[in-house]
Structures are given as structure tokens and as C-alpha cells.
Length: 194
Image (cartoon, rainbow, N blue to C red; front, side):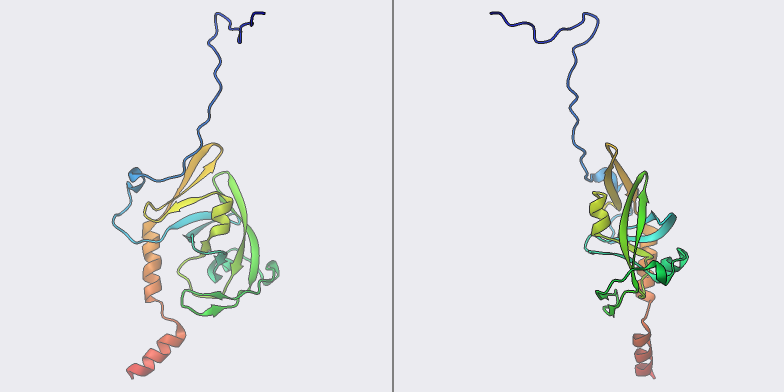
């Protein structure tokens, strides 16, 4: 018994080929450093749309397990104590002090057409940043970030999208941190100098 032709081709059409989609590669190259002041030790500070507002001085922190919101942003978003739900685990501030959170609130973070909701822990502590985005947001959006390249890259609708950091803002935050003196330290150092 003979085998029939495997495909029937119209003389006017080209043979059909299966589409092979290559997986998106989230990575960085030397081209990603173009426009970045090098060398540097800057943190990755970006602007994100949080709760419907463009929020500057957002620290992208791969080492943090929770998103943090500081008092300035809490006030600017017109949040009230009744908007918060309980969060009882203490946190450690930049100053090394234990901080009891006010509570937490779930808010959307929008990047382009992608929206991810995360829980922000609201704390009364000093920070040069308005908020910190951490592993929950990074993992939900499938983000790969690089402080060296000052970028965040993530997959979206079959493309690699990116958010570019702001080195100037990162440096302003670093200066603010070094100039900030907690009340207890500043009063005790004043006493020593008298």
C-alpha cells in the first residue's frame, strides 16, 4: 500500500511552517549601561504608579521581604487609620531601631498595562524613600533588576519592558540619609560637645 502525500500544497502558496516562539530573555548587556554614570554604587530608585498616583523615590530592594510605605506617602495618598488592616510583626528601620507598623494596606502598582496588587506595611520611621518595593512585587511581575545597569526588566505581552532608575534621585536620597540625625543621637552628641 502506498503512502499519500503528507501535505497538500497549493501551487500559489508557500508551505506553512510552525511558528516557533523564542522565550523572552530577561538580562542585561553593556548596552544597558549607556546613559548611566559609571562607575557608581547607587541604589535602584524609580518612579512607579501606586494607588493611581505617580510616586517618586521608590527603592527597589531585592533583599527585602515586604513592601514598606513611609508617612509622607501615607499622607499624600490621603489614607486614614481605618484604611489599614492589622500587621503585628515588628520591623527594623534604616537606623537599626525596632519599629512597630501602623498596619498594612493593599494597593495596586501599575507598570505600563500591567497591574500587581501588593500589601504595603505602613511604618512611622525615617526614610529618604517614599516606599520600598520588594520580593512580593518583584516576583509577581517576574522582574529582573540591576543596580549596575539602573534598570528593572519584566515580561509583558510577549515583550521585555523596562523601567529606568533615576541616579540623581538615588544620590539625593543617599545625601539625605547621611545628613539625617535621629533625635536621640543628635541630642546625645550635642551633650558630649558641650
